[in-house]
Length: 248
Image 1 (cartoon, rainbow, N blue to C red):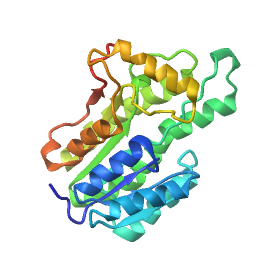
Image 2: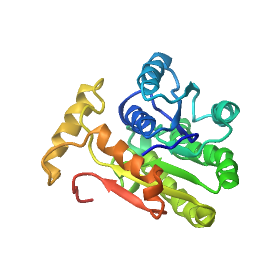
Image 3: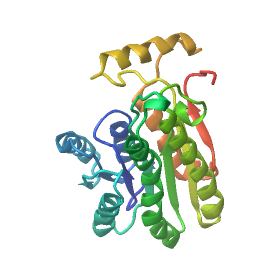
């Protein structure tokens, strides 16, 4: 299953789910544009891993919560590869703030990273997809897109908006060979490994999962791989929950 001369841009691809998606798509033959906001060394490590599949890679650092950075990131990808065939809007922030204590700056920052980045990048990448008559946009949402989340009102609002963007783009561009879908991962093993409190919270979620275990980054990446493939072409405008059967 190869995708010769096709390119994917994955935001937040230096670690965790983003890294797994980059390697999944590199293994399917996509050239890979990696992105991070600060940790370039992590992206460089992923680039070395992706290179082993014989594809070309590009590291485009930048903060997707800033419109001008999105324009530069996507512009670098277009300059090198001519088009972005698969856009994966993965980068996200999820701060905790009680609603009445949340300041406007934090609200705006979450909306920019978790929702507006997908809008900005899609606007830049879609013309190339239209020209080719083939394209994929995959948004990564989390369970915040399905249910409200205590202490993360801004994240829930942003992810609900990403779901709305997904459905709208799916209808507007589906006839041009471009599918748009959104994935809602459940609790993932190893997530927030650098935050013991959050890691313990995620581990505690196993009791709510019928399969009795946490998910893996690779399982989310495999779903992206299907959506990015020709075999997944008839999947469009869908919220795909990859959560082991967790009830929302």
